[in-house]
Length: 118
Image 1 (spheres, helix red, strand yellow):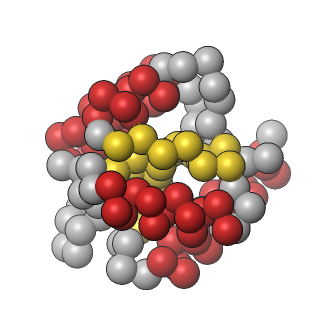
Image 2 (cartoon, rainbow, N blue to C red):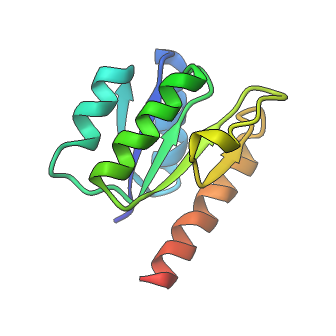
């Protein structure tokens, strides 16, 4: 089963994203805040995808991407605020959370492409 680590600084958004991803058949681990995310990414549990919520400040997203890259070989999807450019933080993919169906479609494409490459 595909394991996703979903990170947010907003608990209600985190719960909503968790349910959406879970309903698509993914195993979801949710992390609320920077410290919780670091704890999960440095654990012995492997993840297939990291999803960073748009509520996370850009600097913290960049730090989390660095931590993820140091511990796991996993794709990173960063959700962005309208007009925000996250190219410099090192995420593999970007999406706006205002389109949940589009985000779920992108997650499916990422997971499929990684499974095909493995």
